[in-house]
Amino acid sequence: MPFDPDVSYAKATLRSAPENLPQELRNIIEYRKSGLSLNHIVGCPLDCAYCVRHLFDNYEMKRPHLIMSDEQAVDQLVRHPAFRAHNTPLQIFNRATDPFLPRVKDHLHRTLELLDELGLTNHVLVITRWHVLEDDVARLERLQNLKVTILVTWSGISDPRIEPIDSSIAKKSLMTLADFASRTRRILYWRPIVLGLNDTDELIAEAHSMSQFADATVFTGLFHREQIRDYLRSVNVPDLYEMVPRRKIFPREVEDRILKAFGNTPIFRKTSCGVAYAHGVHDYNGHLGIERICDICPADQVKICTAAHTPPTQVQLLTFAKEVGLEVEGIEVFPGHIVVENSTEQQRYFVQHATGFQVHDRAHPHLPGRHGRAEEGWT
Image (cartoon, rainbow, N blue to C red; front, side, top):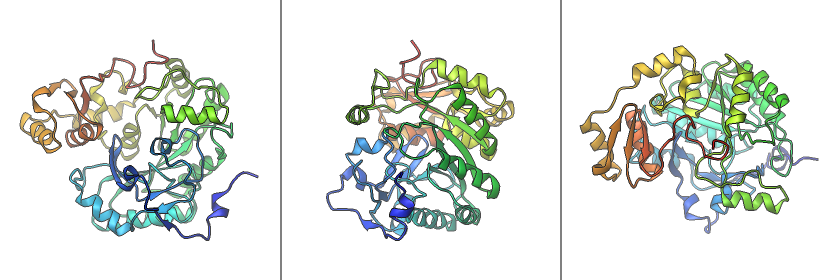
């Protein structure tokens, strides 16, 4: 019988995180491309083999643990130097647990309510592959200010060594959101799509069918790292790809087949693009400025993004750069994007969200037509 966290943990309370928790996980706030990420719970039993917790040496922590209270976490978030009320996109529990696990979702709802009570209108992204129930949707719908998007992760992968959780759970969650959500937006988060694993015509057709229950579909490839490949090898999974690059792997031929199958159905290459479309607002990551990323977007959405795509002034840009310690001498503004030097992701994402323009490091340029993906499958 498949492992069921709802049975195993339904009556359990969250334990406090152990003293030897890696410092990287104890730092509960991290800037990621889709937003300032809040993660005051760590531990997950879902055992997705490609989980980023391999990178934190935390994959074996199956029971969720609480690092601090929701009130303390929210206080740290709104006091964080990078946080801007009504502007900074946020993510909750997207790094080290699933937000809709038993007991974890109590903290998810409380965290959202605390932020909402502050009158904040920021985007909040919540990513899950677990059960979203009618009661959960009812509680989400009572929020009045935040722009909440539930991204329901689905891959169609049936190999239990890679993904032991039945993909039908995500499908049911998406349908529940479609039935009962109005203010809360829903995304079919189709990932990771891996060449030769879950890219069959049948699975593509299933994803297209599921997209009717979503406000938008976002599709993407595999985030591959040495630690993830080592784990896959340890459970006797042949290497999915040769490379372990810094960017996600998503071969051109897979994308071409998916786009052909979806036709005019809204589908997006980037998470923030799908979120923006679902809410009828511009893309806060400014992808419009990168050649051919937006060529699949609906025309009305492109108009919304174009109207908001205004270059920052030199004074604004230098102010933001100095605020996060970027070297101002190497900054250049090109039509649609900004180039900096010797930067970290955290620095770039802050400037990106503050300006609405893509920010790239000169050492890692985005090549035309590859959409910010790894070179495997594109050369």
